[in-house]
Length: 172
Image (cartoon, rainbow, N blue to C red; front, side, top):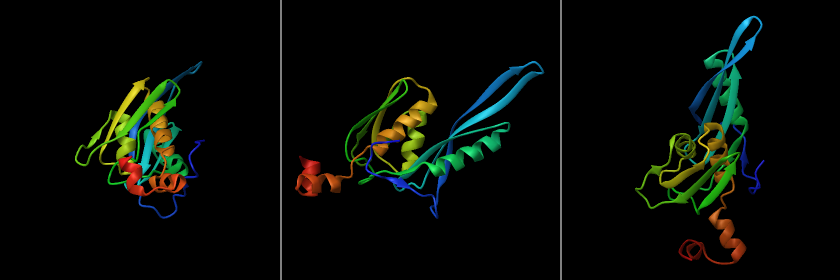
């Protein structure tokens, strides 16, 4: 799914909080009339570097949300969070949605739009600058944000690869 360095996580015994990003009512017209169903886009995270997104579809809203939560728990990833922010800038694309996330100084807060904000807060990132470019479709924006977080590199691994100290990675 991502070219990240094996950062998938099992839901096991994690304390996960869920946030519904969007609920979409879908209408299928049949010869017997209109058939309504719902799709729910849900983000789950533990607020400490683990986040996942899921999509649930059902005839009832609550059932769709429940299915979305279960799907999100199957797609958990680990995000490198250092001092409440991300280690470096990242650009990711999903469909026509492009997202750009950038580390910010302590105290900045989460500067991000709707569906991006939900993902970043669920991951436990407290200071970040983010911009959604292109399509504003919540599903693709959430997927692109998760992809961007998944492709972030761990600062310790970067320092080890370059044979330099962790301090030089951030100050270099």
